[in-house]
Length: 69
Image (cartoon, rainbow, N blue to C red; front, side, top):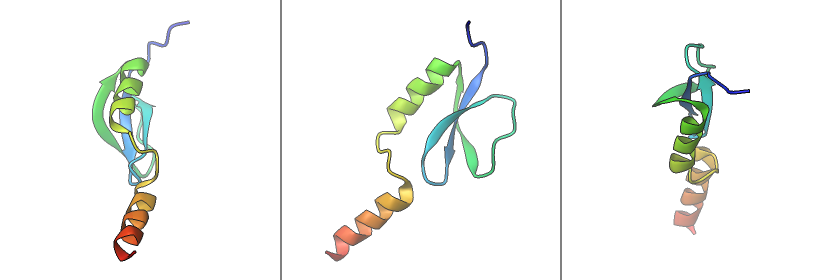
């Protein structure tokens, strides 16, 4: 069975990415990244931009800890 749903790439405040069906209201805390299309295209885009899977808050915490030694 072929998935004919249009999707959009979404991102939350922790810089985590997902896909969401186009036309449906976004869940709280998520915003549009700007990419829309079929499932595969959206997942390809996420693979390009989400290179560090750690949540933003963890990355920032580790960066601060590195600076203070």
